[in-house]
Length: 220
Image (cartoon, rainbow, N blue to C red; front, side, top):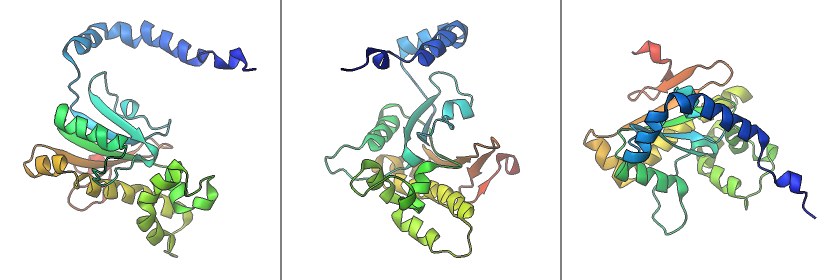
């Protein structure tokens, strides 16, 4: 018999909701009502990791209606593949670009990413080739293999390198989508990369020309 207590909605979420209603919602009630009446018009799409420690709305201190966020394991963008299968990230991308007319797309990675760990060392994670996560992280297999074979990098250096290289790889994949590449070539859509260090709170932004990740205060 199922334990009914285990089926109850989590108290921690209800407590958080009550604090939200007494705090942020109360302070921004008019804004929420306006968004409900007029619809959302976010200026930026963020493709981020599911990791609970790196929520884009928190990192960028964004208010309701400002960001259109899609999160998946290791913040990956697959290549354009109109094959009739189910593609949640691609569907969100299409909606953001074609329906919401967002102006910028940011692929946001972060330090200590578990998905990246799995890509570098599949044996360290409870994955198998038939699992969803195993196939998903296979998107990085060619790049991960190159980093694994580098004897000059330490384990932590390999990890950070793949976290950042995967961001560049996702931006390359973004450009395989016609709706993205056409608007980017017209100067109507910007593609960006960012990497957030959970332990220090530092944000590193990808330089569009060199591909290097630098602190924003270096080129503002």
